[in-house]
Length: 173
Image (cartoon, rainbow, N blue to C red):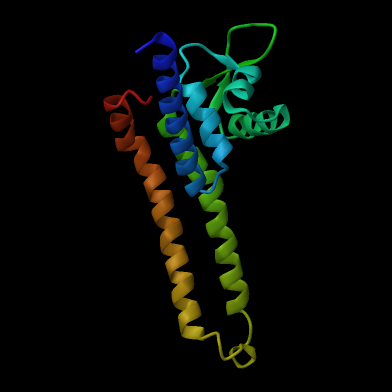
């Protein structure tokens, strides 16, 4: 096998990995491009710039720029501390913390929105509710949302106790 064919095989396998992580991230409600960018940054030996990402992904500068902004917002990637003529990026080495920050930033907000909608509907006079809304089922839904919210908050609190050890075990911190 020649060097070029080895490189081509490696490139196609790396592309499959990048695409797979993109699919996984998309499944969790982010954009596929976020997962692809993070994967390329994570796998790189050195900090990378936007041009590196544009060239490897074959996407527009605008898409990479917007996606980098999103990833920086969630602290998934960081600006490299090394001073260069262009900004370079690295993945956040504290991935366990990142995951929990995202959970609290996104899922907690979604649960709060659902909770407020349940409470608002529950304040409607029972006689004015449509026949499609059972007051008892609405109450159960509100209880489920409250349990989900409490579970999420407990999970995040437990992180401080036990997930630090998990992070150390897998070198994620």
